[in-house]
Length: 78
Image 1 (cartoon, rainbow, N blue to C red):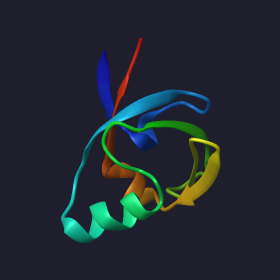
Image 2: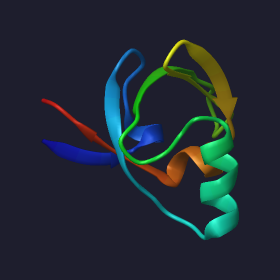
Image 3: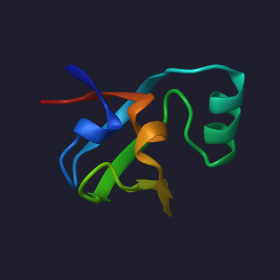
């Protein structure tokens, strides 16, 4: 299994969140959106030039900023 940040996933690829880099504010903000350690996320698309990243968490689609997506570390089955 390989770990990488969310921006490094290919479109359509999924991974389980294993770590969130950042302090309490970052983890709380992501938790409110349903993104927390142990949750599986799927990358839908990302924009060029560090634009927003579209992901799916459960049955919900979200768009998060590139900087925030870089803080989400996922474990991917190869």
